[in-house]
Length: 372
Image (cartoon, rainbow, N blue to C red):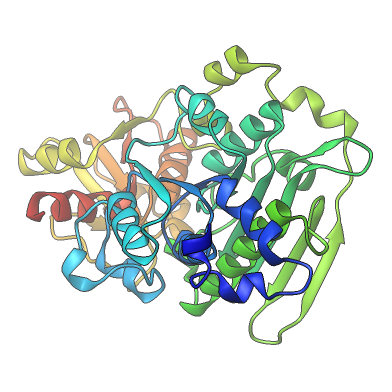
């Protein structure tokens, strides 16, 4: 620790923190799930502060549209794995730490072993299925979880964990069950001002540091909502809802059997989810008619033959869809699934519709991987 004094000098001289606070950070093990808009500032500040062991879990690749808010990456790094790239940059920032990258997609089958090795988890993800999976796992393992979310001009931060009564307040005490597909737009659809994830991500890093060092008032069992246009900040107390306990898996075995994508309406037994490569090969072979259900002007543009029928007017335009094999697509895969459900419900046809898994962004990612 003596040779590290200069690096953490401002912490050592900080009243109420000092060397004892820094020792706690250096001994801590923190897992950050998601290395995107929220994850970038979280990771940068945790590494700079001296969190001794940092795990980075993200299977995604850097794309051009990320760079408006994901400040760890550069244009020359498009196509590279976020977790690996972030780990290299954090090591350069603070080589005294242990930093590992997990490049596998987080699933119910691998999350238990991953989370078990850390003291605290930071949820920097951007989809409901993964949020519920992370929260349920942390609840079962009794691990503190720092949550963050952003959309357009507003962000949220909270800390889930044991309250003063020894009850674990989880994400389900805030949102008992997932919203229906399309009810809540993600950033791919609604957009987000680039600096907002930076603000909320720094709040998450702050809460993690406070929790580990044992300083200040941690947002345990509280939800902070921040509006960046007005600077209005609201903190709401969360309480344990006993009636929701049956929604959380009882143990590891039950967790691993839970289909979180189905739970969040991201899969349907009658609708085939086509990976990007299969989707493009079927279009090239003329086996399917692709239908874009995005609204006018959404980017990136589809570089293949397709029809364009926005989801907002799909029901009134069902007769425009040809009597062939069809595959819906959108930006991230949520609206296309909804479109296929509407089609099944309202249109009699011998053909079962499919949809592009991961949306047009999955195709962009695949193209970046091939260039890498």
